[in-house]
Image 1 (tube, helix red, strand yellow):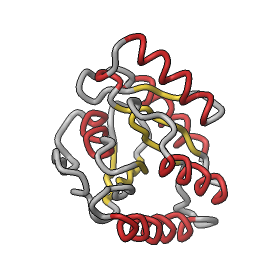
Image 2: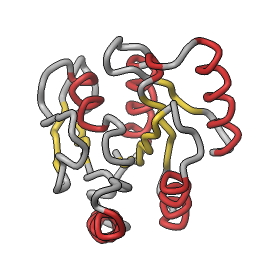
Image 3: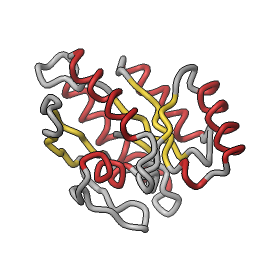
Length: 172
C-alpha cells in the first residue's frame, strides 16, 4: 500500500483484517519503515500486506518525499523478477482531494516500474453523496480506470477491496 501521509493506509489494514494490527495515529507520519503483515484470513490465500510510509507530509517537505522515494524504490526494485515479486500495488488516495500532484507523481512512478496498480479512494464516509459521486468520477477520469471507494470507519467497500486483493494474489 502506498499513499500520502494520513490517507489511512494503516487504518485500512486494520479494517481489512478486523483487528488492530498496524499502528495508527491521528498525527501523520507515524509509519516510518516498510511494515510487513502476513495475512491469512477467511479461507483466502496467505499473503503479505506491506504498509509503506506516507509521502507528502507538509512538515517533512522534500526530505520526506526523498525518504519515501528511496524506501519505495528499494522495496519495489528489489522484488522485480524475484520469486517474492509483489502481486500489485494499492495506491490509496483521499477521496476528498482528487488529483493531488503527489498522488499523480506516485501513480506515474508506479507505471514506469511496471507495477500492477489499483486506486483505492479512502475516507468516502466523509463526503456527501453528491460530492462522493463527483469525486469518484473525477478519480476514475484522472487514473483512467476503476477506483475502489472504501471507508475503514464504516466498512463500506471492504468486501470489494478484498475481491480486488484476492484477484491480485491469485494471478501471481
